[in-house]
Length: 406
Image (tube, rainbow, N blue to C red; front, side, top):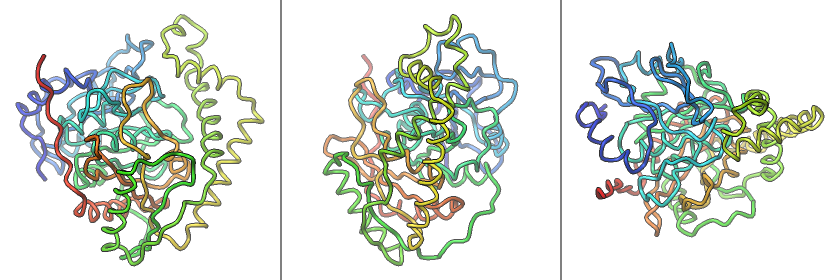
C-alpha cells in the first residue's frame, strides 16, 4: 500500500496547506517515515484529545494551554506506531470535542466549515496532508467532517477501540474512529488497531436504502447521490429496498443531549468553579452549565429512553443486513458559527453499530458529497469490505487545489 511516505512531501503539503486550513495544532518532531511494518510509510494525524507521547494534549481549549507533553501514546496511537505508521502531529479539535467552531477550514472551500468536532482530522485527510487521521465521535463528530471534507470516515462499533489516553466528553457515546483517503487505508489501520474477530455475515447482503423521517431538507444533489449509490449497490447486495428508517429522531437527539451534557459536566464541570471558567468557549460552557442542572431522575429517564430506542431499532431491521443512507442532508455549510448538521448521525451513534462514509463526487457548489453504510454492532470488517466494493463505483472526487499564496 502506497502512502505519503516521503518526508519532504509531508513537509511540503504541510507548508502549502496548513497556513490556509489550520488542520494541525502541534507537529511531531521530526517528521519522518518509518521503515518497516504493515503501515510503513502511512502518515497519521491524531485529534488533539488523544495522547501522543512527547506532545501536549490541549483538547482545543485555552484551559489546557499549559498542558505538559504526554508520557505515553494512547493505545490506539501506539498500535499504529508499532505497525510502522508515521505520526505527523495533533489535529485541530473543537473544545473538548464539543461544538464550538475552530479556526480550521474546509480544504475544498475555505469559506466553509470542515465540520466537527474532528475538524482537523477531516481537513488534513481531505487536503492530502496525511493518509489517515484518528478522531472521535460522540454524536456526529467523525462522520460529519469526513463527509464535508471528502474523506472516508469509519466509526467502529461502540467500545471496540480502547479509549485509554482519550479525553472523555460523554463516555456512554465516545467512540474512537478513523478518517482516511480511501477505504483500503482505513482497513489497514483498523486491522492493526483491534483483534481480527468479527461477527458472521452473509456473502451478499440484504440492504435497505433510506433516510430518517425528519423535517430536514435534503439537497437535490445529495438525494441524487443516494439514488446513484443505491443503483451501484444493487451490484453488491442480494436485494435493495427503499423505506424511511424507523426511529423517533427528535426524541433520540433530545435524550442524547441530556445524557451527553450530564456526562460532560461530570468530566469537566470542575472548570466552571475556578479561574478557567471565562476561558471556556460559549457552547461548551453552556453545555456544562445545563449538564450540571440535569436531575438524577431526568438523566435516568433519558438513559432509559435511549436504551429502549436501541433495543427496538435492531429487531425492526431483522430482515436487513446493511443500511445505505446519507450522513448529512447537504454539503459543508458556510462559516456561520456552527460545525454543521449532526442530527442524522446521533441515532446511529446511540445504536452503537459501525458506520462507513464514502465520498461521492461533488455537488453543484463544488462541495464533496457523501453516502454512508451502517450495520449492527460487531459487523465492522464486513461493513468495510462492502464499503470497499461500493467505493469502486463512486464518482471521482477531484482533489482540492492549494489556494494561491497571498
